[in-house]
Length: 408
Image 1 (spheres, rainbow, N blue to C red):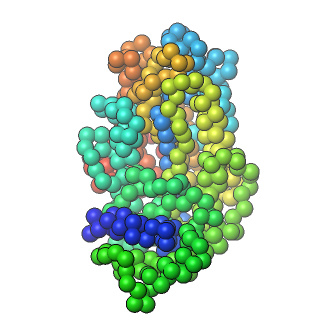
Image 2 (cartoon, rainbow, N blue to C red):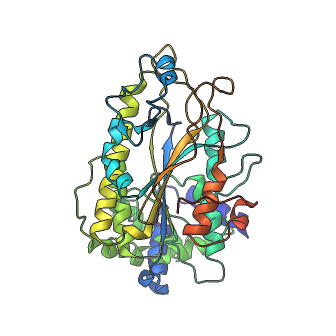
Image 3 (cartoon, rainbow, N blue to C red):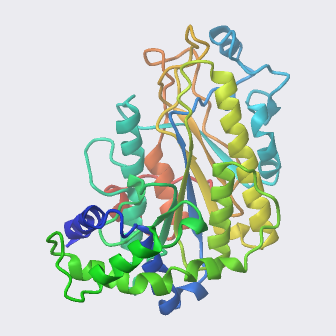
């Protein structure tokens, strides 16, 4: 039962708090992937980068050829002389300069004016909408999780099918049938406790007549997880151990997370979807310094990631897609920042991308209560990724059929 799987995770974590970390589920994944031969499989992967907090698209993809941009943003604009020009009207924030080689190589696509109907300006709800691909209703699973369920139907389970880098499982990866592990770094991929705590957990989960301090209908499944945990918990580090990065990654959590993902890609354990986040882009005050710092992390991280993948000859197998829950308002506010807005660009990277600019830049004068008017539904972007990159029908995942685009 699908609800039971989610209940199992919640009850297991609650019942074994202090003894058994979610890492053990990841350990089971390592064992399952190795046992099923998934490590020998090759194929395409999708990396989803969440720019948390609502990234300002206008100072990311700068319409420097439009005088209105400088009129409405007198103090936080990016000077035309600093813009990394893509054409005579549009250019990149200078902190994104490390990405220009990917654009020149046609390995970077920029989709302009992306959003959804009846925009919601709440961080929580809009993030949920992007992660579930359901603007008009509440659903329990994420669109990537549903894809993993759909793609894995009828096959032996590969619990490495999805990997989220970070402290918690994002909703985009929540599935009905597929366990998606979260991991911060390889050092955290082990039993989360002291030696005594581990021995105590072994005794509890292994039976031995122990009187359980709680009741759970999922105890046998928890015991199954634990029975594999210790034997398998060392397997992923061993699989990744043969990977040596070809370039030094930035010493930021985002850069190091990408380094970890590159290691798992090179381990070739059959992961279809990765997730990582960067933020916060919620720049109500003093936007330029905060956003520039984050865009620098994004650009240097992605640049290193693809240089590394290229050196290992796997860059053509990995498509990277960014999203943010919304853009920012067109006019700057009194605190030299911007408030929650609507449409924003999405970026895609990789050898399978047909590079270039897609769609018109939204007008800066024809607005919707001060916000940009969007023209591309984000679900069309997802449909394109699902059908043209991951090779599955998008309707079962998205719930409806959406038109596809030509960026991949």
